[in-house]
Length: 383
Image (cartoon, rainbow, N blue to C red; front, side):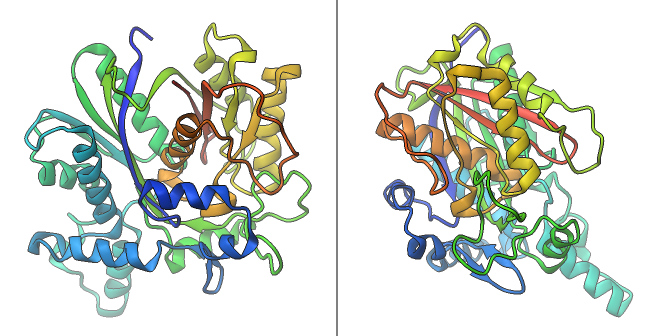
């Protein structure tokens, strides 16, 4: 990389909430009672936004007549984008590049419109423009009155980190000076949940933690879906950055199955090595794992880390045991955890991790994400 890419600001909304203090408090507790506060149960376990966040987003929806028919995916993207621009001190109307993706897109509206079509034979006028994936970033650009490029995409569960990759490329090339990148996902719909259950990866836990991500001794798959959105404000070499992106890596696995990665997650081995560049292995202090809570997914990524780091294993963590798997936005929420650890100089582990002693400053954290298709991304986040 020619420049350190500055993370000037970060804004998220997730089952943990949306403010730094609430999010930090949530990460410091491994108590089962607090963990259950983030999860609810319909037919399946889910990790929805807190009620107060849903009310706040509903107010945003009703603040403008044009927004009332938008999918929750877009409403969340509007919310986090407004907040990150305010934190970064940018101005509406600036030439801000926007790349906000989603794995599934407008799932709520798609299912609603499809049901109406099946039952009535017709569909609403807005069914097409409000369910195209491109409407995520285009509505954000409209809301911010941005004059920069606007991009939406789906690269399954690594969508948000791929958005950051795109933003880094634009900034490195000099074609943009400010970029918002991330993901938004509202997948808690009947059909989406049924799809995850059909491939037999969904949690059926009745005792303890609903999602046991990074528990390498679990005997059942324990993935739980969550909803949320997150974006970062990115610039080149801003000395006031809260953290920096100092390495990027990406790779695609040679798939043996349409929904899995290889046994040793070769894609992660390649993406981590690329992101590290010349940085000594011993300089990596922690990794925020993708770790979806499935037996094969968690274990294959762990094996990839072992292959790359050998005797220099860093501390390993994930946030999916606490907030569920938020699909296209999950990588950005992992960046949030990495930045929080760097700022607080505190390692936030999982209840399934081995005990550890933090005997040196946290300076470099890797963040991993991968999705259906074996499309891995790794970012190196540094002070």
